[in-house]
Amino acid sequence: MTFQFNFTIENHLGNESTPLGDGALALDSSKGSSVSESKKGKHRDKKYSTEQFDWPQDHSLEHKPVGNAASSQNTDSSLSAGNSSSNLEPHETQPSMSVAKEHPMPKDLKKVLENKVVGTLPGPHVIVAVVKTVLLKENFPGENIVSQSISSHSDLITGVYEGGLKIWECTFDLLAYFTKAKVKFAGKKVLDLGCGSGLLGIVAFKGGAKEIHFQDYNSMVIDEVTLPNVVANSMLEDEGNDVNEPDVKRCRKSNVAQELCKCRFFSGEWSEFCKLVLSGEKFFGKYDLILTSETIYNPDYYSTLHQTFLRLLDKNGRVLLASKAHYFGVGGGIHLFQKFVEERNVFETRTLEIIDEGLKRFLIEMTFK
Ligand SMILES: C[S@@+](CC[C@H](N)C(=O)[O-])C[C@H]1O[C@@H](n2cnc3c(N)ncnc32)[C@H](O)[C@@H]1O
Image (cartoon, rainbow, N blue to C red; front, side, top):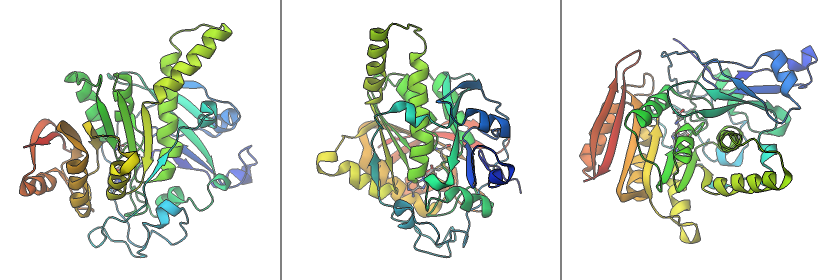
């Protein structure tokens, strides 16, 4: 079995008397690379810096939902609500009811990038910034999805942690497709569903989408990965004009803030998320485009996911979905999902691309019949 994380845990840092102190977690949201010891120390007090990421191509990711690995230690309110079972097995567990909430954009954008190292994603797609994060355990009392994932040797813990801390490879397939197919985002209302790092939504943002919403199951993922990635990208865009005069600077600052107003962030389980966005004053209107990568691994979630598309997609909208052919150990996969969709008879699915290298992967489009 191959097991891979995109972040490293440094529980031993205190013993090595690094400036991070005891129980520091280093979370590296790049694919397969890790932050070196010296780099972590070096960047701890920096606001942010830019570097090129090393981005190894590993196609051997394996999902392993864990049963009893989801311990009751989890006290994060949005997570613990989803952790009612102490023995979580992929096919016995229904999607939990992790309460949905909106995460406001912090006023101090520099703070969002504190303890982060910003790099750029190599590849043929538009330039995208990704952050590496250093998390201090004491800042996240009760938030232990990282250590739970590590200790359970799993990328997913059903109903507790749904995988958003790392970038899954189908995200890269969709990014490549956007470029190849010249997907238009301008003026569209876009949802990055199960966003994790949020790279799909970020590309939509850069492509001129009117509004971009990011949703992830875990609130920590939104706060520590998605939001910083979006902020880093808005600043990256802005770095193009290198002007130093104070009023130009002020104006640039408000431009960034204005652009960021197009982005909204949500955590929580899908049916709860639907309730939140469809309810009363929070109603934001339906989405023209729903982007979603590696979200169909668990057949227990199909009904909720299908319902989410049904409720949130505009009647002329489309879903662009990327998935592996099969998710070993969890049981989901593209064929099972397509069959599920066919049986519901609401959406039409069309295969856009089959990527037949490493683990077979699919890009599909869903539109209303
Ligand atoms: C395997 S991760 C993929 C993350 C990201 N899209 C990528 O490709 O890197 C699956 C994502 O789907 C979301 N997700 C899965 N099941 C969910 C559920 N029942 N409710 C809400 N979100 C869910 C999680 O938040 C998680 O980020």
